[in-house]
Image (cartoon, rainbow, N blue to C red; front, side, top):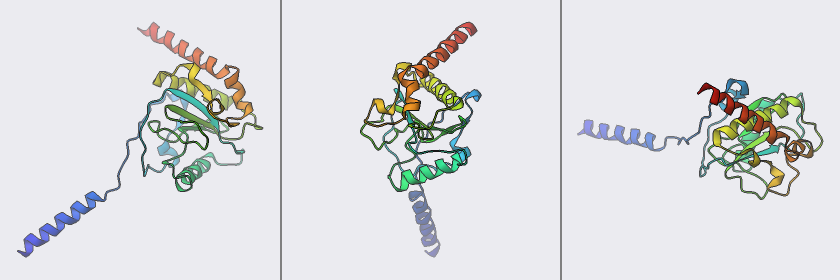
Length: 213
């Protein structure tokens, strides 16, 4: 009888451990070309999700800026880690509000998993939007060539992968009353520079694909 009782207790304990096991949430993994030089979440110390929201499908690409100055002496990884902690602790969001972040050297960092919609302090609904944030405040900071190239290349990759037409590459201020992504970055959206460069890349890749067939 004692052996049976002991075995029964072990089963209960094991069952309880399984029941209280920390849940894991699906994370869509993208496969980037080497030329994009993306810093993966696993490489900058991203903390796994502890909550979830309904997933979405990407239909648009929307460009943001951080809205605060970001300078050469700041560590982008520390900045991103702090943003993740702040987003969860202070805003009660599941993660960083953006799917990608770009630093002053044009390095691209994975942030929130692409299968979950981002978050915003403004009025638009970001479901269906792939959110790209350029670190810094481009109301007065000047976007540099490396950053602009990274924005174009990332937009082209996302546009091809998710079948987003270049006409659906816009800025945050196209959907809400905000200065984001700042006049010095929004200039390249308003004048069509980013969209046209993305078209050029997609057309070139399409021609190369046709030649290989």
